[in-house]
Image 1 (cartoon, rainbow, N blue to C red):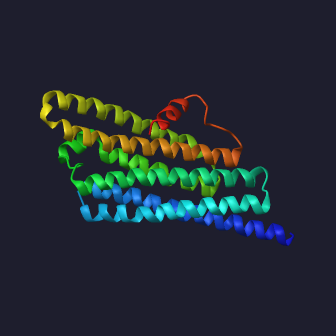
Image 2: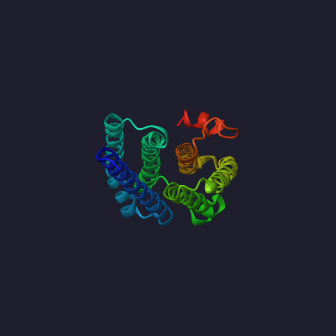
Length: 234
């Protein structure tokens, strides 16, 4: 193995380390976001907001590292797909962190506070858990380079979508019965919407991993086009 190849492999491993560190930070952000919302923990929510800057720094670092790698080593085939995927994944992780921060801000502002009964009726914790599981499992998928679990991950997004649609119906009924709670219902809907979008972005990450490992493009496959349309409006 020549020195250039050894150097490129070291750089590639360093990039993988960067994306792994960013992933774990975003996963922690999402977990703490859930905890702060479910317990109405304002201090924990403030921690999520403060750590958002670290996520942004990670994204910039990953992007710069990937750009330098392409310029220095002109990667091809699987290495090129990996670098391209890492650029896209870092951007998607940053957007997931943005949604987590948005929920945390609602906790701090008090606009996301609802009764425990309504939380249970809307199955908000179940939605959170599914999104966290998607993000965690997709990391395992990348580390193990095992795309066979992609279907299992994408199925969880279907579960989130179903809960989101049910939640919208329940909130619509609530506002019909209690019209004076319009602002409160809107704030609750925004929470559901953010979790639903996190699930969609986790699907985008799965697509990037499949592209890197199997050289397959899922982006325009049946069932994913509707998510693309949603993404353009978020």
